Length: 171
Image (cartoon, rainbow, N blue to C red; front, side, top):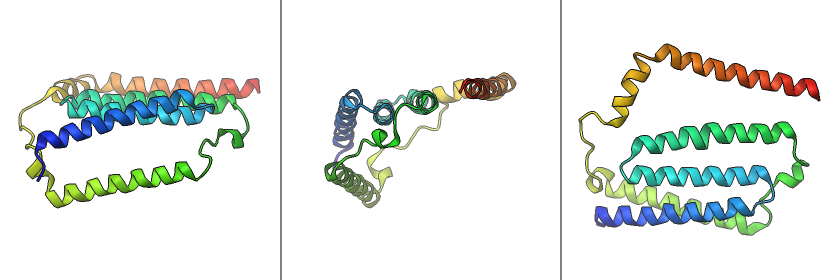
């Protein structure tokens, strides 16, 4: 059975290489939609690196804010501007990309099966039962400041609807 240090080291380099590869693919794509999807891939890899460095809150915020909200807004603007013909947006040309995606999918499935066979709690230490950084931030946010938090989300939704209405009037 592999040691936990080897497990973490392998995945740290794996996510690092995936982030570097995704960033290279991000800057070399001609289609803004395909570039945005590669940037989402990079954001998920960086989030995984944060989680491995025991910064779970930063990893979760990375996914929620950058891979979620900002990329959705970016894709919304790209789609609203209607940049190009749909055939130009497709970035997966040829069988090489499909074969690579299949190999990566099989490798990820093999990792999951190995982890299920090894029984993950035996490899990873059990989490502590004490309060962590997330609890210290979440308690006041969802208890004391719940109403302002929800009002901000409704305000952002109204701004998005207003932007769509204004954009549709100009067309």
